[in-house]
Image: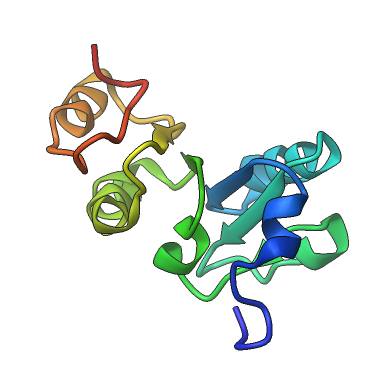
Length: 128
């Protein structure tokens, strides 16, 4: 994200703010669909050169940048990156935000992620 593109009224006016972490095959399609549905989508993927601006996705410089002001954080990383992505996300997730890990990891990995301490007030669809 550049200095001239902070989280601002333009981002928030578009609709709910959704962070999409991982703009590969699944993430880029989901992000584009969210934009089409009216969400302000802030995306980041260190490995994918994003053509995301063409889809209306606000390209961000990192995970923390993408999460700013997001009510929903969708993590579509590889399973082997899921724990690091969650650890990096925790300090930046807003009190009322939902973090949803959508990787194809094992049930043991999902249980481990769901058991991680979260920001007070944040919610995870993975926990019961």
